[in-house]
Picture (cartoon, rainbow, N blue to C red):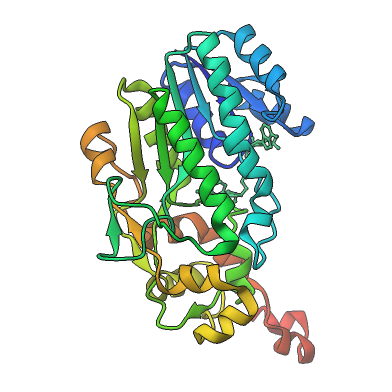
Length: 330
Ligand SMILES: NC(=O)c1ccc[n+]([C@@H]2O[C@H](COP(=O)([O-])OP(=O)(O)OC[C@H]3O[C@@H](n4cnc5c(N)ncnc54)[C@H](OP(=O)(O)O)[C@@H]3O)[C@@H](O)[C@H]2O)c1
């Protein structure tokens, strides 16, 4: 199949393109930052510079390359600084999920593209009621925290537009598996605390497993929404200590809710104490997907072994102050 991957140079795109090429697909890969052309070419795709927020350019790119399938993996989260206001951090990504999706779908219709798969998100989106793990049929949170409303609305827009058009939406868990994963620095710096009882559930997914599910979704001929998450949705109080250890970091701090609300805002409190996780039963059943890393327990260790080793080799600052390097290395 000729596959047009929007966002081929990003975290998921760079895992997806080689898997598509290995399966014999021909890939056109878009990038936004000029320096990423070579990255996309080296992965085995035909690189194309594209701003998804320019509908005319999107139309031209799709009509000229004549793909049979489109995958929308464009976000704008590189170097994102998470603040109390999620919507501010996600503003550009929200535009990619609304205007960008609309532009790609319009071009897909005009070019008779037969498959359309788009990225969405599973963690922290389901209604905060009932059991801890939710399926695609369960309701989304009807009252998301005020500072996340625009981001939630953008994901809803993407999901409705894509499924209305007969496409597939993949609600991925939290990505991990790269050296620049967003959680690494906050966990290393002990800026990601366990809030309250740490009961909020997160769903994770290794980037290679997310890419593998995406290939299966493309090669299938069905439509609909799939959670693409690992087998073990887990509360923060369980996974955060394991992640800190896998990174060679000191244990996470514990914050009472009021303190977390003061410093990090309501969304951080909800994520840490009330959020629900997602079930992967449907993607396994319907697409035959099996994760290579069924749990973040082994996935974190595999992904971060080299980081943890470097961290543990660093002399501790107290020792460094009083001892010579030769002595430290003993
Ligand atoms: N489910 C999740 O947990 C999740 C989802 C998404 C991202 N993340 C995390 O966020 C971090 C950053 O993600 P990332 O490395 O994929 O970077 P990113 O900045 O989010 O970029 C993703 C892709 O979208 C492209 N892009 C950005 N703006 C665009 C635009 N206006 N038009 C067309 N394409 C555009 C990028 O191109 P260029 O690279 O050329 O700029 C790249 O190919 C990573 O740690 C990642 O794991 C997590």
